[in-house]
Structures are given as structure tokens and as C-alpha cells.
Length: 67
Length: 317
Image (cartoon, rainbow over the protein chains, first blue to last red):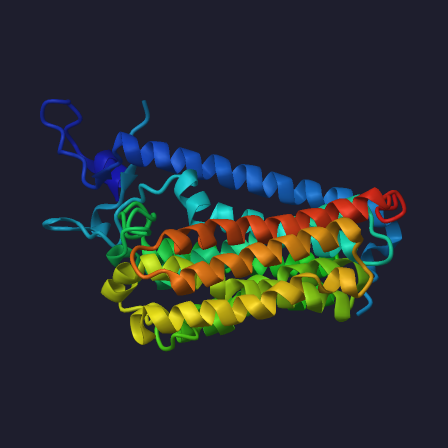
């Protein structure tokens, strides 16, 4: 892929380097990805915290789930 | 600054295939997909069901239940927007939503909605109880499969039957505390169920061109304005006494009773004004706005009524 293409290229001088194949993410796409990553991180952190607190609250009863 | 690449084989010769192009959807777009305003009403009515229920619940468990119900409502909203993107694009009110506006791809919305639905039901079942989780799953399935995919495009009774999904949250709240269902939350369910048609038909009366353009068979589009005005009055005449039922049945106090009777009278007056209205939709717009206030007041006073009785024994640590 891209990295291996660059590594196999015999001429590494910037002026003759092959243009990199692939899609360059725009600033907007990078910003959107960053905001999604932060939101997923926060959501997962809150989920872990929720399970931790409920386990403390319920104690051994956390495994009892009667209908 | 780091440079990020997507493999070249993912791009076509004439540029990037739009279906696999890097997403421009930010966290805010996903939040919008969850219909936060609808979600807040769902959480509020579920909270009332939870507080009115007899017995005790730990505050953390109560909060967990409300979070799961909120996320489940968000999942329903996302799946609705995924399926209805074509309709949304043709209606002025919904054209700016993330999918028709091109900020989010349908597949992203579908994956997001299914993930939220799975997590909300699973966490509610694991941390609260299985009955509440089953009711939440039923609510999501009913809203997405029965209302969105089936009824909305096929019958003018779409919001009558589909309204059941929006009416279920108080029952889920109740079940989160008691692990079961009884008559009291069913009355709350019926209040929201009977409130939904006059509320949405009042909106549909002055938005019917939008619905007609989108091909949604709302009652004013299919049966005309006069038939819709009559139906609004009929449903309001059933709703008004039903709104007072919690007081008449003895599980709400006098403050609730006065609010329900006064609010119900206001709804009937507005329904009569809609029926008498020949030109314009002033009364319909007033009914739409007042119906939101009416439902909010009923549940807020019921909540305050129960809280004045003391919640110390209800939320036990």
C-alpha cells in the first residue's frame, strides 16, 4: 500500500518522489473524525463508569436478575 | 500536522466513490439524529412513571433506567431518520436533517441506530430489570417497524396507532421500579395515546402541503380539512376526561385534578375553534402549541404532586 510503495521506491529525493496515492482527508473530515472519536471515548468511559457504580450499588445482588 | 490517507483502491478513477468517501459527520450530527427534543419529552414522561410507581428504587438505578430510555428513544429517532430520509428531503420542516442535508450517510445512521438500540435494551436488562428492557425493545420495534416502515406511508391512521410508541415511556419508567405493569401507568399511556392525534393533526392541518409533497397520507391530505377538524374534536373529547383520570382514580391530588380539568377545557375550546375556523389555521397553530403545554403540565403537576408527598422513601440508598 502507500507505505510499502514509498519504501520500495529507489529514488527518495523529494523532487522525483511519486505522488502519494490515496485520499487526503480535508480539514473538515479531520475535524469531524476528531469530534466522533472524542464522543465515542466519552460514551465508552461513561458506560464503564455506569457499570462500575451499579456494581458497587448492587453488591453481590448484581448477578441476581429475577423476572 | 499529520497527513491521513485512505487506501487508493477505495477511490475510483474519477474521484472518490461517495458511498465510501471519508465521513464529514461530526458528533453534533449524530446528536441531531437522536431527535433530542423528542428524547427530552420521552425522558420526562418516563421519569413521571418512575416516580409515581410504588416501591423503592436506588437513585443510581433510576438514573440508569432514564439514561437507557433516553438512548432507546435516540435509537428510534436515528432509525426513523435513516428510513425516512427520502421523505425528509421533500419536506421543508425536515430538509435540513443530517441525512437529506448530506452531512451523514444513511448507512452511518442505520449502524448508529442499531448500536444504540442494542446497547440501551441490553444495559436496561442487565442493570435494571428484564421487563423494562423488554418494554423498551417493544417501543423501539413498534416505532421503527410498525410506525415508520409500515403505517406512516400507508394509512391516515399512522399517528393514531403509531402514537402507542410515544406513549409507552411512562410504563417503562413504572416497570423499572416495580418489575411489572399495572393500571396506573396504563392510564398515563392512554393519556399520551389520545393526546397524539389532536396534537399531530393540528400540525398536519397547516403543514398538509408539505405532507402531500412527500407522499405521506396524513389525515388532512387524504380526508380533507373538515374531516380532520371533526376528528380532532372527537379525540379531544375523549382526552379531556381521561386526563383527569389519575385524580379521579385517587393517585393524584387536587392540584392535578384542577390542572387536568382546566387544561382539558382549554383543549376542547381550541378544538371547537378549529372546527369553526373557515379561513387560515390560527386555531390549529394555537392547538399545536397548547397541546404541548397541556401534556407537559399534566405530567409536571403529577410529578410535583408525588414529590410533595416526599420522595425520600421512594429513592432508597
